[in-house]
Image 1 (cartoon, rainbow, N blue to C red):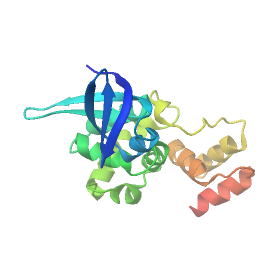
Image 2 (cartoon, helix red, strand yellow; image 1 turned 135 degrees about the vertical axis):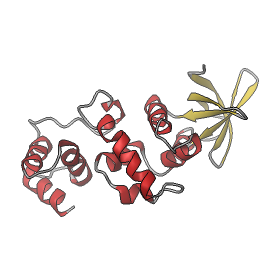
Image 3 (cartoon, helix red, strand yellow; image 1 turned 120 degrees about the horizontal axis):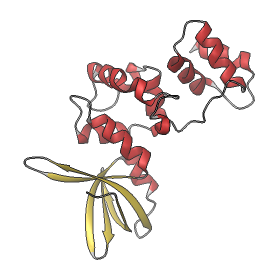
Image 4 (cartoon, helix red, strand yellow; image 1 turned 90 degrees about the vertical axis):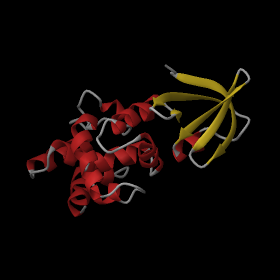
Length: 194
């Protein structure tokens, strides 16, 4: 129903922002990361929206960009994850960090998020891992650069696959461990050390 709201960032509280557009103050639930990206109150902004309609409540959720909104929609399609838990997950780190944790099956990191236990973290990995991995049809969510076989990080991915990693695990390991100027061998060693 709503795609986005463009207006003035009026105020923010914990996980809530107010955007004034044409004399109407829209209260949106938002992640900490979205609130940070809006800047200071009084600034003009554009917030992508999702309207949640339940039997007893209607809530509007706001996102800094389309990728965050689409990822939110993927999260709430997982059994046991509601809108508020999805916002909590999005508040836990950058979108690329969260996606890397899922692609790398880092259940420990995910289970440290407030409200997310080990079983929920495992469910998130199982449900989303293949949907957000580079090369899948929803790789729009992956904000790290695409790894090609011609680059040293692409060669590192292929080497890790030959050592028994899945493609998703190899890509996640390379993204996590690569630093500018590293050779293929250094990337592989860093990924193996973990």
